[in-house]
Image (cartoon, rainbow, N blue to C red; front, top):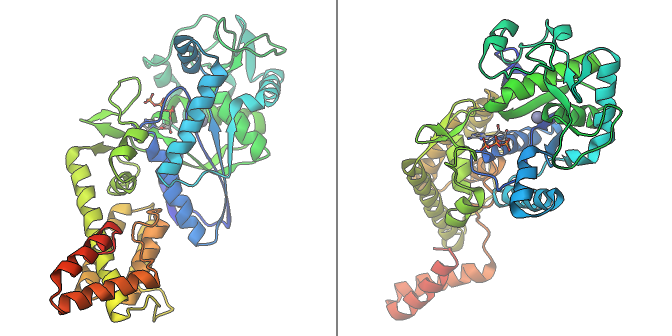
Length: 436
Ligand SMILES: Nc1ncnc2c1ncn2[C@@H]1O[C@H](COP(=O)(O)OP(=O)(O)OP(=O)(O)O)[C@@H](O)[C@H]1O
Ligand SMILES: [Zn+2]
């Protein structure tokens, strides 16, 4: 398949049978919002799709369980940092489950890798790629000028004059970033360079090095806001330490916005995942994300939610229609053609084209229309396959027991015999079960 690589700014062919993937996980100081769910659902769709082609996936994600935001929350709640991070790690995993997102192969809280972090930073100091100053350890950008800025596509001079860089007299170069932070508050670890905590960029780089044994991974994913400085700084440390690229391909999803502004905890314009799923079927969010290419920004609105509701209503009506065919006309879900149909071929073509999900949704619409015209086993099986691959769970569930078939038949007989009172009673029962 072809995927867009933020590093080379081209769509590149992905042709391996085993893929090592990393995605930056949440900082666990709060519940996640539906914007945070965009990278999770994106990776879920990508991985489910790759798995249909028997590609083996090794997917690692971190949990940032040490951070200033967690410390502040712990102080605010008068609780330990461990309790706060444990509470929100569990909430995060629950939210993923509620969205039918398959968990990564490995989820590692960064606090579990402290000796590895310290060894990594020490190695960078030993080789002159990092230095101790004012109790902190900084990465030495001057030594890596040739590689720095490649991911974000910015020149060092531009970055230095940029307003995002804070002036710090401890630094040799204003772009030098913190690998180890000497701090007064929060949990601290002992290290040869003093008590403190690792910086966020180092955490991801070390986890990747540790889990993937210092190799170049295939895909590194995360939201576009992480491209600079976070991913740039992850990458440069890895290059300095291991003399190889961190990732062959960098994948960045666009932001979910609300009224045109990035959905963000700090701005407060958030819909939490747990709020969303208590109000709507979680599949709505997945559908909403698929309406737009993952690289583009996506604005959530009442109108879009309305469109999603309509789509699932249509799908549910179709499901009932097929169930009726199964119960009353002995419709059999066996595929007649063993070869991939044109629909499935198109599905692969669109997905292979950098996950062109808007086109996939149009394809689903066409398939639904076709089945509505004539309930055909090949079409129904194709629709099931496509919905399943996209991770829509059992939204198009056609399972029906013999007993339920008998009840639908009986309802039909009662109607034919004009026994409307009994027919209505049975109809209510079948309706509650979502069968008609
Ligand atoms: N509005 C958004 N749309 C899409 N992805 C987002 C959005 N906000 C955050 N992300 C992504 O969610 C993932 C988790 O990030 P993280 O926990 O750092 O969120 P965050 O940046 O703290 O959120 P916020 O900006 O709301 O405080 C990252 O990959 C990040 O890029
Ligand atoms: Zn990261």
